[in-house]
Image 1 (spheres, rainbow, N blue to C red):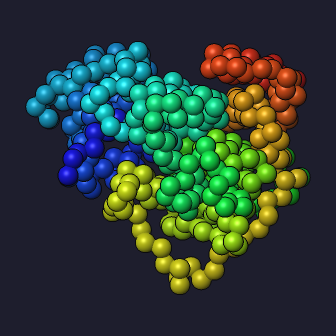
Image 2: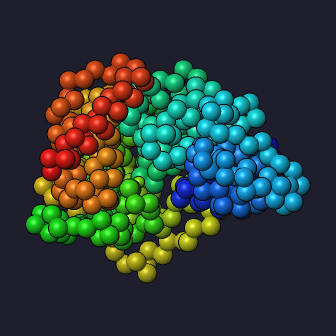
Image 3: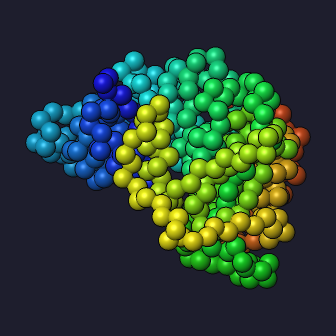
Length: 399
Ligand code: MG
Protein backbone atom coordinates (compact mmCIF):
# COMPACT_ATOMS: atom_id res chain seq x y z
CA UNK A 1 0.00 0.00 0.00
CA UNK A 2 1.26 3.49 -0.85
CA UNK A 3 1.78 5.61 2.22
CA UNK A 4 -0.40 8.71 2.35
CA UNK A 5 1.76 11.72 3.25
CA UNK A 6 0.02 14.04 5.69
CA UNK A 7 0.45 17.65 6.68
CA UNK A 8 -1.47 18.49 9.86
CA UNK A 9 -2.33 22.16 10.37
CA UNK A 10 -3.34 22.69 13.98
CA UNK A 11 -1.65 19.52 15.23
CA UNK A 12 -1.90 20.41 18.92
CA UNK A 13 -5.61 21.29 18.86
CA UNK A 14 -8.48 18.89 19.49
CA UNK A 15 -8.81 17.80 15.85
CA UNK A 16 -5.04 17.51 15.41
CA UNK A 17 -4.72 15.32 18.52
CA UNK A 18 -7.59 13.08 17.38
CA UNK A 19 -6.14 12.85 13.87
CA UNK A 20 -2.77 11.71 15.22
CA UNK A 21 -4.56 9.17 17.42
CA UNK A 22 -6.15 7.61 14.31
CA UNK A 23 -2.93 7.90 12.29
CA UNK A 24 -0.94 6.05 14.96
CA UNK A 25 -3.24 3.03 14.50
CA UNK A 26 -2.27 2.71 10.83
CA UNK A 27 1.48 2.97 10.33
CA UNK A 28 1.03 0.99 7.09
CA UNK A 29 -1.17 3.73 5.61
CA UNK A 30 0.01 7.11 6.84
CA UNK A 31 3.24 9.02 7.08
CA UNK A 32 3.22 12.34 8.93
CA UNK A 33 5.26 14.69 6.74
CA UNK A 34 4.63 17.87 8.70
CA UNK A 35 3.09 19.15 11.92
CA UNK A 36 1.97 22.76 12.30
CA UNK A 37 1.20 24.28 15.69
CA UNK A 38 0.53 27.71 17.17
CA UNK A 39 2.30 27.95 20.50
CA UNK A 40 1.99 24.63 22.32
CA UNK A 41 5.61 23.56 21.83
CA UNK A 42 5.60 20.96 24.65
CA UNK A 43 2.87 18.96 22.95
CA UNK A 44 4.39 19.52 19.51
CA UNK A 45 7.68 18.13 20.78
CA UNK A 46 5.93 15.05 22.18
CA UNK A 47 4.06 14.53 18.89
CA UNK A 48 7.29 14.86 16.90
CA UNK A 49 8.91 12.15 19.04
CA UNK A 50 6.08 9.73 18.20
CA UNK A 51 5.32 10.61 14.56
CA UNK A 52 8.80 11.55 13.29
CA UNK A 53 7.80 14.31 10.84
CA UNK A 54 10.20 15.87 8.35
CA UNK A 55 8.94 19.41 8.97
CA UNK A 56 7.68 21.30 12.02
CA UNK A 57 6.10 24.74 11.79
CA UNK A 58 5.53 26.91 14.86
CA UNK A 59 3.30 29.82 13.86
CA UNK A 60 3.65 31.93 16.99
CA UNK A 61 7.01 33.73 16.72
CA UNK A 62 7.57 33.86 20.50
CA UNK A 63 6.96 30.14 20.73
CA UNK A 64 9.34 29.54 17.82
CA UNK A 65 12.06 31.52 19.63
CA UNK A 66 11.32 29.62 22.80
CA UNK A 67 11.67 26.32 20.92
CA UNK A 68 15.18 27.28 19.83
CA UNK A 69 16.10 28.80 23.21
CA UNK A 70 15.02 25.64 25.06
CA UNK A 71 17.37 23.45 23.02
CA UNK A 72 14.47 21.33 21.77
CA UNK A 73 16.27 20.58 18.49
CA UNK A 74 19.06 18.76 20.33
CA UNK A 75 16.56 16.93 22.55
CA UNK A 76 14.63 15.86 19.48
CA UNK A 77 17.78 14.50 17.86
CA UNK A 78 18.39 12.43 21.00
CA UNK A 79 14.87 11.02 20.71
CA UNK A 80 14.46 10.37 16.98
CA UNK A 81 17.99 10.55 15.58
CA UNK A 82 17.56 13.66 13.41
CA UNK A 83 16.36 17.28 13.50
CA UNK A 84 13.31 18.03 11.34
CA UNK A 85 13.18 21.20 9.30
CA UNK A 86 11.83 23.91 11.65
CA UNK A 87 10.03 26.99 10.34
CA UNK A 88 7.70 29.86 11.20
CA UNK A 89 4.37 30.93 9.77
CA UNK A 90 6.00 32.42 6.65
CA UNK A 91 6.94 28.91 5.49
CA UNK A 92 3.38 27.65 5.73
CA UNK A 93 1.84 28.55 2.35
CA UNK A 94 4.59 26.89 0.31
CA UNK A 95 4.62 23.84 2.58
CA UNK A 96 0.89 23.37 1.91
CA UNK A 97 1.71 23.11 -1.80
CA UNK A 98 4.73 20.80 -1.41
CA UNK A 99 4.81 17.86 -3.81
CA UNK A 100 5.75 15.62 -0.91
CA UNK A 101 2.29 16.03 0.60
CA UNK A 102 -0.87 14.21 -0.53
CA UNK A 103 -3.30 15.25 2.17
CA UNK A 104 -3.63 18.40 4.25
CA UNK A 105 -5.61 18.24 7.48
CA UNK A 106 -6.88 21.82 7.84
CA UNK A 107 -7.54 22.14 11.56
CA UNK A 108 -6.15 25.54 12.51
CA UNK A 109 -8.90 27.33 14.44
CA UNK A 110 -10.16 30.73 13.33
CA UNK A 111 -9.45 32.92 10.32
CA UNK A 112 -5.70 32.14 10.60
CA UNK A 113 -6.57 28.81 8.99
CA UNK A 114 -7.91 30.33 5.79
CA UNK A 115 -4.77 31.15 3.80
CA UNK A 116 -2.95 27.85 4.26
CA UNK A 117 -6.16 25.95 3.48
CA UNK A 118 -6.62 27.95 0.29
CA UNK A 119 -2.98 27.30 -0.69
CA UNK A 120 -3.56 23.57 -0.34
CA UNK A 121 -6.73 23.76 -2.44
CA UNK A 122 -4.98 25.76 -5.17
CA UNK A 123 -2.31 23.05 -5.31
CA UNK A 124 -4.95 20.37 -5.87
CA UNK A 125 -4.43 18.59 -2.53
CA UNK A 126 -6.85 16.35 -0.74
CA UNK A 127 -7.99 18.66 2.05
CA UNK A 128 -9.58 17.27 5.19
CA UNK A 129 -11.43 20.37 6.24
CA UNK A 130 -12.02 21.04 9.92
CA UNK A 131 -11.52 24.81 9.80
CA UNK A 132 -15.01 26.29 9.59
CA UNK A 133 -13.86 29.86 9.09
CA UNK A 134 -12.31 29.22 5.70
CA UNK A 135 -15.68 28.34 4.18
CA UNK A 136 -17.59 30.91 6.19
CA UNK A 137 -15.23 33.74 5.32
CA UNK A 138 -14.42 32.79 1.77
CA UNK A 139 -16.63 29.90 0.70
CA UNK A 140 -16.96 30.99 -2.91
CA UNK A 141 -13.18 31.37 -3.35
CA UNK A 142 -12.47 28.04 -1.66
CA UNK A 143 -14.93 26.16 -3.85
CA UNK A 144 -13.72 27.92 -7.00
CA UNK A 145 -10.10 27.05 -6.13
CA UNK A 146 -10.96 23.40 -5.60
CA UNK A 147 -13.01 23.16 -8.81
CA UNK A 148 -10.26 24.70 -10.93
CA UNK A 149 -7.33 22.74 -9.41
CA UNK A 150 -9.19 19.45 -8.97
CA UNK A 151 -8.61 19.49 -5.21
CA UNK A 152 -10.93 17.39 -3.06
CA UNK A 153 -12.55 18.86 0.05
CA UNK A 154 -13.52 16.22 2.57
CA UNK A 155 -15.50 17.50 5.56
CA UNK A 156 -14.31 16.56 9.06
CA UNK A 157 -16.95 18.45 11.03
CA UNK A 158 -19.24 15.68 12.33
CA UNK A 159 -22.45 17.04 10.71
CA UNK A 160 -20.95 17.69 7.28
CA UNK A 161 -19.10 14.43 7.38
CA UNK A 162 -22.40 12.67 8.15
CA UNK A 163 -24.08 14.39 5.19
CA UNK A 164 -21.14 13.51 2.97
CA UNK A 165 -21.51 9.87 4.00
CA UNK A 166 -25.25 9.96 3.16
CA UNK A 167 -24.82 11.55 -0.29
CA UNK A 168 -24.37 9.42 -3.43
CA UNK A 169 -20.70 8.50 -4.01
CA UNK A 170 -20.73 10.35 -7.35
CA UNK A 171 -22.22 13.52 -5.83
CA UNK A 172 -21.04 16.65 -7.62
CA UNK A 173 -21.89 20.03 -6.11
CA UNK A 174 -21.87 21.75 -9.49
CA UNK A 175 -24.81 19.49 -10.48
CA UNK A 176 -26.43 19.46 -7.04
CA UNK A 177 -30.00 19.68 -8.39
CA UNK A 178 -29.66 16.38 -10.27
CA UNK A 179 -29.39 13.99 -7.32
CA UNK A 180 -32.99 13.97 -6.10
CA UNK A 181 -32.22 15.61 -2.78
CA UNK A 182 -35.12 17.19 -0.91
CA UNK A 183 -33.09 18.70 1.92
CA UNK A 184 -30.11 18.37 4.18
CA UNK A 185 -30.86 18.14 7.90
CA UNK A 186 -28.11 19.22 10.26
CA UNK A 187 -28.59 17.94 13.77
CA UNK A 188 -27.78 20.09 16.79
CA UNK A 189 -27.45 18.99 20.41
CA UNK A 190 -29.07 22.24 21.53
CA UNK A 191 -26.09 22.82 23.83
CA UNK A 192 -26.22 23.24 27.61
CA UNK A 193 -29.14 25.73 27.47
CA UNK A 194 -31.58 23.75 25.34
CA UNK A 195 -34.33 24.06 27.96
CA UNK A 196 -33.53 27.47 29.43
CA UNK A 197 -36.04 30.31 29.16
CA UNK A 198 -35.18 33.69 27.64
CA UNK A 199 -35.08 35.17 31.18
CA UNK A 200 -32.65 32.47 32.37
CA UNK A 201 -30.47 32.92 29.28
CA UNK A 202 -29.90 36.58 30.14
CA UNK A 203 -28.16 35.50 33.39
CA UNK A 204 -25.74 32.97 31.86
CA UNK A 205 -22.08 33.13 32.98
CA UNK A 206 -19.01 32.14 30.89
CA UNK A 207 -18.43 29.07 33.10
CA UNK A 208 -21.96 27.79 32.40
CA UNK A 209 -21.62 28.46 28.68
CA UNK A 210 -18.45 26.41 28.25
CA UNK A 211 -19.81 23.24 29.89
CA UNK A 212 -21.11 21.19 26.95
CA UNK A 213 -23.13 18.02 27.72
CA UNK A 214 -21.83 15.72 24.93
CA UNK A 215 -18.64 16.96 23.28
CA UNK A 216 -15.34 18.05 24.81
CA UNK A 217 -14.46 21.28 23.01
CA UNK A 218 -12.55 24.56 23.23
CA UNK A 219 -14.04 27.63 24.96
CA UNK A 220 -15.02 29.57 21.83
CA UNK A 221 -16.79 26.66 20.16
CA UNK A 222 -18.50 25.73 23.44
CA UNK A 223 -20.08 29.19 23.64
CA UNK A 224 -21.00 28.91 19.95
CA UNK A 225 -22.70 25.65 20.74
CA UNK A 226 -24.63 27.22 23.63
CA UNK A 227 -25.89 30.12 21.46
CA UNK A 228 -26.27 27.80 18.42
CA UNK A 229 -24.08 30.24 16.45
CA UNK A 230 -22.02 27.12 15.76
CA UNK A 231 -24.98 25.55 13.97
CA UNK A 232 -25.36 28.80 12.07
CA UNK A 233 -21.74 28.60 10.91
CA UNK A 234 -22.35 24.97 9.95
CA UNK A 235 -25.37 25.98 7.83
CA UNK A 236 -23.11 28.39 5.94
CA UNK A 237 -20.48 25.65 5.54
CA UNK A 238 -23.14 23.26 4.23
CA UNK A 239 -24.35 25.86 1.74
CA UNK A 240 -20.87 26.05 0.17
CA UNK A 241 -19.84 22.41 0.57
CA UNK A 242 -22.89 20.83 -0.97
CA UNK A 243 -24.06 23.51 -3.44
CA UNK A 244 -27.74 23.36 -2.45
CA UNK A 245 -29.84 26.52 -1.97
CA UNK A 246 -30.69 27.86 1.49
CA UNK A 247 -34.29 26.57 1.25
CA UNK A 248 -32.99 22.99 1.22
CA UNK A 249 -31.01 23.34 4.46
CA UNK A 250 -32.56 22.76 7.86
CA UNK A 251 -31.67 22.18 11.50
CA UNK A 252 -33.09 19.58 13.86
CA UNK A 253 -32.37 19.50 17.59
CA UNK A 254 -31.20 16.08 18.76
CA UNK A 255 -29.88 16.23 22.34
CA UNK A 256 -28.01 12.88 22.37
CA UNK A 257 -25.65 13.78 19.47
CA UNK A 258 -25.89 10.24 18.07
CA UNK A 259 -27.48 10.99 14.67
CA UNK A 260 -24.86 13.36 13.27
CA UNK A 261 -27.01 14.60 10.34
CA UNK A 262 -29.36 13.38 7.61
CA UNK A 263 -30.13 13.66 3.92
CA UNK A 264 -33.76 13.52 2.79
CA UNK A 265 -34.41 12.38 -0.78
CA UNK A 266 -37.37 13.03 -3.09
CA UNK A 267 -38.55 9.40 -2.80
CA UNK A 268 -39.17 9.92 0.94
CA UNK A 269 -36.01 8.16 2.11
CA UNK A 270 -34.00 9.74 4.88
CA UNK A 271 -30.42 8.56 5.25
CA UNK A 272 -28.60 9.24 8.50
CA UNK A 273 -25.15 8.58 9.88
CA UNK A 274 -25.03 7.49 13.52
CA UNK A 275 -22.15 7.03 15.92
CA UNK A 276 -20.88 7.85 19.38
CA UNK A 277 -19.91 11.52 19.66
CA UNK A 278 -16.20 10.97 19.00
CA UNK A 279 -14.35 13.01 16.36
CA UNK A 280 -12.13 10.05 15.51
CA UNK A 281 -15.02 8.53 13.52
CA UNK A 282 -15.37 11.32 10.93
CA UNK A 283 -11.58 11.77 10.90
CA UNK A 284 -11.00 8.06 10.19
CA UNK A 285 -13.69 8.18 7.51
CA UNK A 286 -12.00 10.91 5.50
CA UNK A 287 -8.47 9.64 6.18
CA UNK A 288 -9.35 6.15 5.00
CA UNK A 289 -11.55 6.91 1.99
CA UNK A 290 -12.48 4.88 0.01
CA UNK A 291 -11.66 2.27 2.67
CA UNK A 292 -13.19 2.07 6.14
CA UNK A 293 -10.52 1.95 8.83
CA UNK A 294 -10.40 1.45 12.61
CA UNK A 295 -10.80 4.77 14.45
CA UNK A 296 -10.52 3.74 18.09
CA UNK A 297 -13.89 5.26 18.91
CA UNK A 298 -16.34 3.32 21.08
CA UNK A 299 -19.11 1.31 19.34
CA UNK A 300 -22.64 2.55 19.49
CA UNK A 301 -25.03 0.40 21.51
CA UNK A 302 -28.51 1.37 20.33
CA UNK A 303 -30.30 -1.12 22.59
CA UNK A 304 -28.57 0.35 25.66
CA UNK A 305 -29.46 3.84 24.44
CA UNK A 306 -33.12 2.81 24.02
CA UNK A 307 -34.40 5.96 22.34
CA UNK A 308 -33.37 9.03 20.40
CA UNK A 309 -35.09 12.42 20.78
CA UNK A 310 -35.68 15.12 18.18
CA UNK A 311 -37.33 18.55 18.27
CA UNK A 312 -37.59 21.69 16.15
CA UNK A 313 -35.13 24.43 17.18
CA UNK A 314 -36.80 27.35 18.95
CA UNK A 315 -35.54 30.37 17.02
CA UNK A 316 -36.88 32.79 19.63
CA UNK A 317 -34.57 31.31 22.28
CA UNK A 318 -31.71 30.79 19.82
CA UNK A 319 -31.71 34.05 17.83
CA UNK A 320 -28.17 33.42 16.54
CA UNK A 321 -29.59 30.53 14.52
CA UNK A 322 -32.32 32.79 13.15
CA UNK A 323 -29.66 35.34 12.12
CA UNK A 324 -27.66 32.59 10.42
CA UNK A 325 -30.66 31.53 8.30
CA UNK A 326 -30.94 35.19 7.18
CA UNK A 327 -27.21 35.19 6.35
CA UNK A 328 -27.71 32.34 3.85
CA UNK A 329 -29.54 34.71 1.49
CA UNK A 330 -26.38 36.76 0.92
CA UNK A 331 -23.51 34.59 2.12
CA UNK A 332 -20.54 36.32 0.44
CA UNK A 333 -21.02 39.45 2.57
CA UNK A 334 -23.14 38.37 5.50
CA UNK A 335 -21.28 35.20 6.44
CA UNK A 336 -17.96 36.98 7.11
CA UNK A 337 -19.85 39.63 9.10
CA UNK A 338 -21.71 37.01 11.14
CA UNK A 339 -18.48 35.16 11.84
CA UNK A 340 -16.34 38.16 12.80
CA UNK A 341 -19.02 39.82 14.94
CA UNK A 342 -19.74 36.57 16.75
CA UNK A 343 -16.05 35.84 17.32
CA UNK A 344 -15.47 39.27 18.85
CA UNK A 345 -18.65 39.10 20.90
CA UNK A 346 -17.79 35.66 22.31
CA UNK A 347 -14.34 36.87 23.25
CA UNK A 348 -15.81 39.91 25.00
CA UNK A 349 -18.32 37.66 26.79
CA UNK A 350 -15.64 35.20 27.94
CA UNK A 351 -13.69 38.17 29.31
CA UNK A 352 -16.84 39.34 31.09
CA UNK A 353 -17.02 42.62 29.16
CA UNK A 354 -20.54 41.96 27.83
CA UNK A 355 -23.49 39.80 28.86
CA UNK A 356 -24.46 36.54 27.17
CA UNK A 357 -27.42 37.99 25.25
CA UNK A 358 -25.24 40.86 24.00
CA UNK A 359 -23.59 38.32 21.66
CA UNK A 360 -26.79 38.42 19.60
CA UNK A 361 -27.07 42.19 19.89
CA UNK A 362 -23.53 42.82 18.60
CA UNK A 363 -23.98 40.36 15.75
CA UNK A 364 -27.33 41.86 14.77
CA UNK A 365 -25.91 45.40 14.80
CA UNK A 366 -22.94 44.33 12.69
CA UNK A 367 -25.15 42.56 10.14
CA UNK A 368 -27.27 45.73 9.75
CA UNK A 369 -24.24 48.01 9.54
CA UNK A 370 -22.43 46.01 6.83
CA UNK A 371 -25.40 44.60 4.90
CA UNK A 372 -24.63 46.47 1.70
CA UNK A 373 -20.85 45.90 1.63
CA UNK A 374 -19.63 44.21 -1.54
CA UNK A 375 -17.16 41.28 -1.34
CA UNK A 376 -15.61 40.65 -4.76
CA UNK A 377 -12.35 38.96 -3.73
CA UNK A 378 -10.42 37.56 -0.80
CA UNK A 379 -8.90 40.93 0.14
CA UNK A 380 -12.39 42.39 0.40
CA UNK A 381 -13.36 39.55 2.73
CA UNK A 382 -10.34 40.17 4.98
CA UNK A 383 -10.96 43.92 4.98
CA UNK A 384 -14.59 43.35 5.91
CA UNK A 385 -13.49 40.97 8.67
CA UNK A 386 -11.24 43.70 10.14
CA UNK A 387 -13.89 46.39 9.91
CA UNK A 388 -16.52 44.24 11.59
CA UNK A 389 -14.18 43.41 14.47
CA UNK A 390 -13.42 47.08 15.09
CA UNK A 391 -17.12 47.94 14.84
CA UNK A 392 -18.08 45.18 17.31
CA UNK A 393 -15.57 46.44 19.89
CA UNK A 394 -16.99 49.95 19.57
CA UNK A 395 -20.55 48.66 19.95
CA UNK A 396 -19.54 46.63 23.02
CA UNK A 397 -18.59 49.84 24.85
CA UNK A 398 -22.25 50.88 24.62
CA UNK A 399 -23.61 47.56 25.94
MG1 MG B 1 -20.16 20.25 14.28
